[in-house]
Length: 211
Image (cartoon, rainbow, N blue to C red; front, side, top):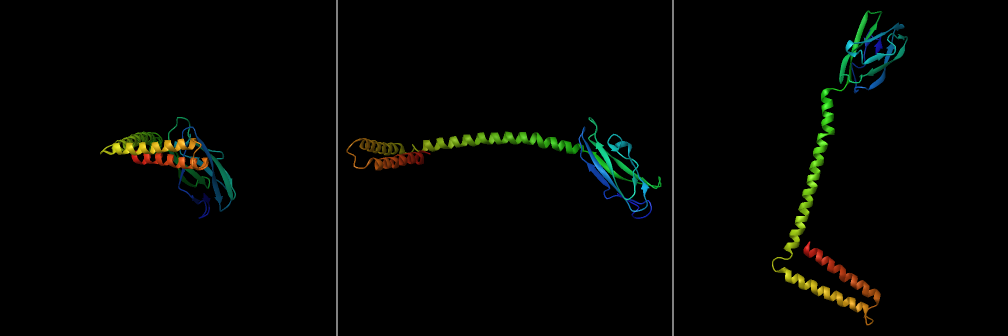
């Protein structure tokens, strides 16, 4: 705040309203900066009765030559009100001029309700919805796989599928016996590669056909 800048005993504030967010049991310290543009003078600081329990000036009547920092402690006692509002007054010229600015200490009731709703109910509701969605999705996936598997055997395709699978299995068994015999036409390495290809083809066919 500025003293004697616009004239003798003039008082100016950079901010007309100061908000200090605190909860019951918390406290916060800050400084009031007094800048004097005239002759050295005493400045008296005081607060409304509504802020008696919330504001403490560590120096109520500083002597300001040019620039002075006055420490102030703001607090809300345990069990106190959530919001405390009032004026801090500055008096100069031995009581001839007095001015003040508003101080809000705490949170409004609407802020407290919003915080509780944001942390509790929506999060629980969202978790419930996500869990329900996961169960529904899993049930749909299982149902779809089962339907696809059953439809693979419908419309007379069952016999054809069995015949193809049996033929491939017989071929696989014959190749395996060829691999185990000493009369193999291919070296063991190439036989192993060929068997791997056949086995992969069978698995791919089963997955594509029935899933």
